[in-house]
Image (cartoon, rainbow, N blue to C red):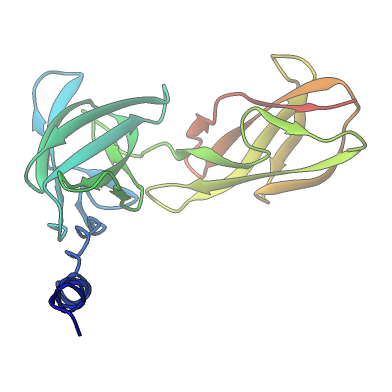
Length: 228
């Protein structure tokens, strides 16, 4: 065997056994800790009659160099996101207001990120004895869905929740107007099946949640389109 061929064999062996470096690990999912899920937050520092600062905590996630914490005002459906390097953040919030939040784990070594679960809570306000339910979470049809030609019925579905677990009914508004009329009054289900729809039409709908104390919350108006 010539020296040249032997040298090539050695190089191939080194390349094969030199071992490719392991790819950087994807960030782990963070576990949310506080504010507590589906509970009033009573631990914030009061800043004024309308605002307080709330400390958020979550578990440290492996293979993570930073976190994005996203807090959503459930009344206005607006998000606020900040990036932190530790597993805690302080956020200024409106009092007597429902929020949801989640954490995204990120790494400087990979582009892949990992999102935590989404929790809801109610930021306490002055003189609050009872808390309105969280706005209903629309699960289908999703906002802006385009349904195929030939669709004649749809199933409306949503998910309700409240701090006190005292939801008693839902009012469902539905129709082809941007300000839909009352369609189902005080239904105790979280769905309305076999709703008749027509072609080439945009439909609008919203859900008002009612609890045993008479408190209400509005999901906001959603829409979907049925093709011709």
